[in-house]
Length: 171
Image 1 (cartoon, rainbow, N blue to C red):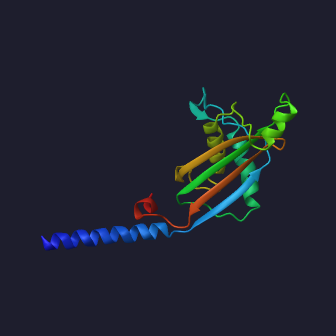
Image 2: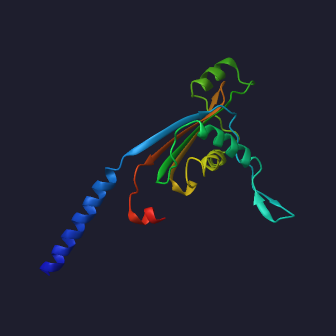
Image 3: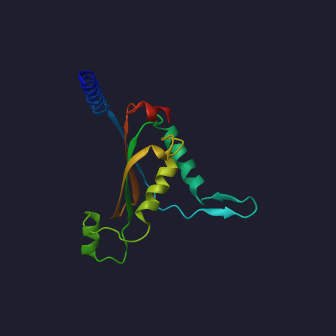
């Protein structure tokens, strides 16, 4: 019985030490802004002659981001990460002056298309293979929609400098 208790205590200590190690892993942050009108990814289509699925326009976004990434010294992310997308849609001309001011200040927010999940998917797919190894690395995401007279997409990525466990490293 004493031996079992000793093993349990040792295991608890190992787990506690591993929690401390994981909590001590540093996180890096990348932030960048893309000055385009935010758009969502259209639904996948099927090419009837080849029977392959494709998404219209996704190659344009990837090429655009590839040009951007060549000019910036970002390293490829291969560890767990948070992904935040803030999209600033054009302020509607049909808003009155008061609404436009409130929209620019962030008090009046869009409740129209594009859907938040499609926007996030568009920009996660855009950076996949150039900045992030795979969008499966995203462990948490946040997408926010705003109005602005200066439409844009602001992306913030926070990623671990090391893996949290051997299991994830092998993945």
